[in-house]
Image (cartoon, rainbow, N blue to C red; front, top):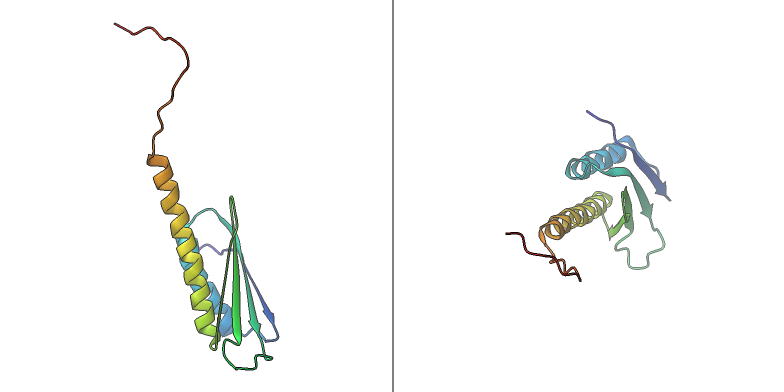
Length: 121
Protein backbone atom coordinates (compact mmCIF):
# COMPACT_ATOMS: atom_id res chain seq x y z
CA UNK A 1 0.00 0.00 0.00
CA UNK A 2 1.38 3.38 -0.98
CA UNK A 3 1.90 5.83 1.87
CA UNK A 4 0.42 9.21 0.99
CA UNK A 5 1.55 12.58 2.26
CA UNK A 6 -0.97 13.58 4.94
CA UNK A 7 0.02 16.33 7.38
CA UNK A 8 -2.05 16.43 10.58
CA UNK A 9 -1.87 19.20 13.16
CA UNK A 10 -3.92 19.97 16.24
CA UNK A 11 -4.81 23.21 17.99
CA UNK A 12 -5.76 23.15 21.68
CA UNK A 13 -5.84 19.36 21.67
CA UNK A 14 -3.55 16.37 21.76
CA UNK A 15 -3.50 14.14 18.69
CA UNK A 16 -3.80 10.50 19.67
CA UNK A 17 -2.94 7.53 17.49
CA UNK A 18 -6.64 6.74 17.08
CA UNK A 19 -7.33 10.22 15.69
CA UNK A 20 -4.36 10.02 13.32
CA UNK A 21 -5.38 6.55 12.11
CA UNK A 22 -8.94 7.70 11.46
CA UNK A 23 -7.74 10.70 9.43
CA UNK A 24 -5.44 8.44 7.38
CA UNK A 25 -8.26 5.94 6.74
CA UNK A 26 -10.63 8.68 5.60
CA UNK A 27 -7.95 10.31 3.45
CA UNK A 28 -7.32 7.04 1.59
CA UNK A 29 -10.75 7.41 0.00
CA UNK A 30 -9.70 10.76 -1.48
CA UNK A 31 -6.39 9.41 -2.79
CA UNK A 32 -8.26 6.55 -4.51
CA UNK A 33 -10.48 8.99 -6.42
CA UNK A 34 -7.74 11.31 -7.65
CA UNK A 35 -4.20 10.41 -8.70
CA UNK A 36 -2.98 14.01 -8.93
CA UNK A 37 -3.15 14.84 -5.21
CA UNK A 38 0.21 16.14 -4.03
CA UNK A 39 -0.52 16.27 -0.31
CA UNK A 40 -3.32 16.76 2.18
CA UNK A 41 -3.16 19.02 5.20
CA UNK A 42 -5.60 18.50 8.08
CA UNK A 43 -5.94 20.87 11.01
CA UNK A 44 -8.03 19.71 13.96
CA UNK A 45 -9.08 22.37 16.43
CA UNK A 46 -10.88 22.38 19.75
CA UNK A 47 -12.55 25.68 20.61
CA UNK A 48 -13.21 25.75 24.36
CA UNK A 49 -14.50 29.33 24.26
CA UNK A 50 -17.78 28.51 22.54
CA UNK A 51 -20.47 29.95 24.78
CA UNK A 52 -23.17 27.63 23.44
CA UNK A 53 -21.03 24.46 23.73
CA UNK A 54 -22.01 23.49 20.21
CA UNK A 55 -19.70 23.06 17.24
CA UNK A 56 -16.62 22.99 19.44
CA UNK A 57 -14.54 20.69 17.21
CA UNK A 58 -13.40 22.12 13.88
CA UNK A 59 -11.73 20.08 11.14
CA UNK A 60 -10.08 22.01 8.30
CA UNK A 61 -8.69 20.28 5.27
CA UNK A 62 -6.61 21.39 2.30
CA UNK A 63 -5.97 19.22 -0.74
CA UNK A 64 -3.02 20.29 -2.83
CA UNK A 65 -3.65 19.20 -6.41
CA UNK A 66 -2.46 20.37 -9.79
CA UNK A 67 -4.40 23.54 -10.45
CA UNK A 68 -6.41 25.15 -7.69
CA UNK A 69 -6.19 23.73 -4.18
CA UNK A 70 -9.37 22.59 -2.43
CA UNK A 71 -10.27 23.84 1.06
CA UNK A 72 -13.04 22.54 3.32
CA UNK A 73 -13.94 22.83 6.96
CA UNK A 74 -16.58 21.32 9.21
CA UNK A 75 -17.56 22.13 12.79
CA UNK A 76 -19.63 19.89 15.05
CA UNK A 77 -19.75 18.87 18.69
CA UNK A 78 -18.02 15.54 17.87
CA UNK A 79 -14.43 15.41 16.54
CA UNK A 80 -14.95 12.26 14.47
CA UNK A 81 -18.11 13.67 12.90
CA UNK A 82 -16.20 16.85 11.98
CA UNK A 83 -13.46 14.82 10.29
CA UNK A 84 -16.02 12.74 8.41
CA UNK A 85 -17.93 15.83 7.20
CA UNK A 86 -14.73 17.55 6.07
CA UNK A 87 -13.58 14.50 4.09
CA UNK A 88 -17.03 14.19 2.49
CA UNK A 89 -16.87 17.84 1.38
CA UNK A 90 -13.43 17.35 -0.15
CA UNK A 91 -14.65 14.17 -1.85
CA UNK A 92 -17.57 16.06 -3.42
CA UNK A 93 -15.15 18.73 -4.66
CA UNK A 94 -12.93 16.12 -6.30
CA UNK A 95 -15.86 14.34 -7.93
CA UNK A 96 -17.22 17.66 -9.23
CA UNK A 97 -13.81 18.58 -10.64
CA UNK A 98 -13.54 15.21 -12.40
CA UNK A 99 -17.07 15.49 -13.81
CA UNK A 100 -16.46 19.01 -15.13
CA UNK A 101 -13.25 17.88 -16.84
CA UNK A 102 -15.19 15.17 -18.68
CA UNK A 103 -17.98 17.55 -19.72
CA UNK A 104 -15.48 20.12 -20.92
CA UNK A 105 -13.66 17.47 -22.94
CA UNK A 106 -16.85 16.36 -24.71
CA UNK A 107 -17.97 19.84 -25.76
CA UNK A 108 -16.75 20.57 -29.26
CA UNK A 109 -16.51 24.04 -30.70
CA UNK A 110 -16.77 24.94 -34.35
CA UNK A 111 -13.70 26.68 -35.66
CA UNK A 112 -14.36 29.50 -38.11
CA UNK A 113 -11.33 30.25 -40.25
CA UNK A 114 -11.57 33.66 -41.93
CA UNK A 115 -10.12 32.45 -45.24
CA UNK A 116 -11.42 31.08 -48.51
CA UNK A 117 -10.46 27.44 -48.64
CA UNK A 118 -11.13 25.58 -51.89
CA UNK A 119 -13.36 22.53 -51.64
CA UNK A 120 -11.71 19.17 -52.24
CA UNK A 121 -13.28 17.16 -55.04
